[in-house]
Length: 331
Image (cartoon, rainbow, N blue to C red):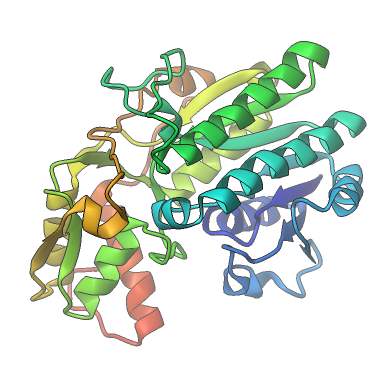
């Protein structure tokens, strides 16, 4: 089968490439490397089932050409990371909303099934935990830049569902909850790779706020497996699914576990949110997925615990930094 992955040189997209090619599919990646990295897919260059198209998701002609050749489309191209969202809000909104519009038009024209990755951010300030796909989305005020990402991804969802209701265009929406693993960069504010790199370098682990906010981290391999299964499930079309892990941890405890697993002498340094992201920043206190729907649909069960995830990321960055690991870190 011929697969198109927009944003395929990104962290999640590159792992999706690996999984699909390993299953015998032909994969075309469309990426402009604005947040994706060539090194994520460099190992695939020269593979007979891999093609790389370096282009902007806003280029309608190239997107149409790529979609026309594909049997399935995974739309992962997006602006990513809290820092990018806060520092470049115009780029964030335009990239997400316009890019998805271009992809949806092309998929509609050729009637190609498309899976769109959304985010747990769309649940916003809701305190109804765990978050279920049928819950209301509670977004903060428009003058707070932080919520531009959530609103943009929510608009993606509304657009995709509009195509589904209008013409039964085959579309699946997946809300990813804090997907992490090897290849993820801490450049755009991703907390776990940042903690791991700081610990390996014996630098202070920087926790924003008081560290009491909680998250549930999902290994990228668990997430990718869910994306592939949902794409191939006819009953998933016109539906929204949470993908994540129920293991909840505070950011303070996460920092402590990274220090413990790496054996680092690093200390934890707390930085106020306003110092890190500006005076108008708001954070979500808890972000926990209700996985009932996806469990029933595809029998989804995360295979990786949080400690498994941390060890994988530690091994990845230790290799990148040329560091030797102490005994007991790797499985």
